[in-house]
Length: 432
Ligand code: NAD
Image (cartoon, rainbow, N blue to C red):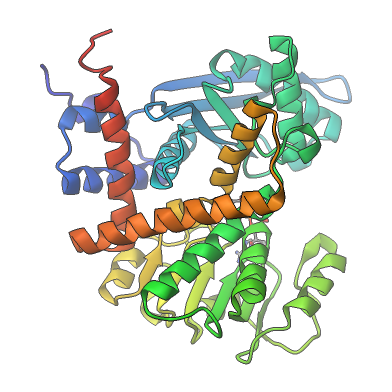
């Protein structure tokens, strides 16, 4: 058999894809994975690029580029969000699809990985234009979608309304109600209870599991959270309310609040609920106003970056005082920073495990849709806890066994699971 060369794989200058491929390569090496299997995993299974025309409200025809990439279906239907952003391009979508494969494998849910997106600034479109864009995109990529084939979800600048339109469009093509075609839908259309809080709840669970492994109970542990949006809000509040942690700092794009004795989250939540854009700006309660940069290097036990990517870098990793970092956001730590943190013995729960609560509850949504039987919120929370804590336990055991950091351990677990599925399915040896 000819050995596949890297020339047949994706090579790129896109930094996210390059970083993802580098992470894959170092994991393949650690696992001493068969080169052919590695070559399959370095590439995407299916890619579809479409030009989406819509009629604008003023009668003009507008066109947009849209993408759907399925990286792997080895472990089940491919799964991943759809984002609307002017920076969306094929390489970014490829990288995100690969990370979805790993995330689903890391928490052992029976999905492969996919991602999609449209290169558009949604703020420039009216609601009607967005609906036409979404429906046309859904129609164009419908041939490669399906509840047992590829299941989209919301991502950046898309939401449960987007998923409701998507589901409606595909259902009308199929001729019957098909809620399992997307996740992240409104509860009234087959969405799951507990989906909104799921990612933050998963981050909280990962934090508590790691604290306990390090011999600490969560009560009184000091926590700083960067980003007080969906993920940061729920992570902070669940850690404080359910586990007795002391949240000493939170921030968003407008401000950063700090009180070493513990913030009054109820007062902050009250402020945010009535502030334009749900921002912290203008909070006058008992807290010092610091910068986002200062928050990252505070004297704290736990740091949860839950805002955007590339926040912990080669420049500030040396000053981080937290013993534990739990990555709520995707890619908040650069490769360079990761090496520094590792050297300094700081424990990092990597994004593909820490923020997997969202895709886990998406999996529960899909299961409920297929059965047309819907769970109570307590059941969703119970099952999420089970999945997150078990996945954390497996990652911890792998890290101990192979004497590696948690990020390397999670990548090794995930890649091995995908490789095993490829091998066991035998679609390589069967030769079609
Ligand atoms: P969100 O838009 O609800 O919240 C983002 C928060 O970050 C906001 O408070 C915003 O003000 C703040 N922020 C933005 N730029 C900032 C900056 N430069 N400095 C400090 N704060 C800043 O988004 P979200 O859904 O909470 O997602 C946050 C991160 O978690 C993203 O990386 C996202 O990809 C990741 N994530 C989200 C989910 C989910 O289910 N929502 C799942 C997996 C991963």
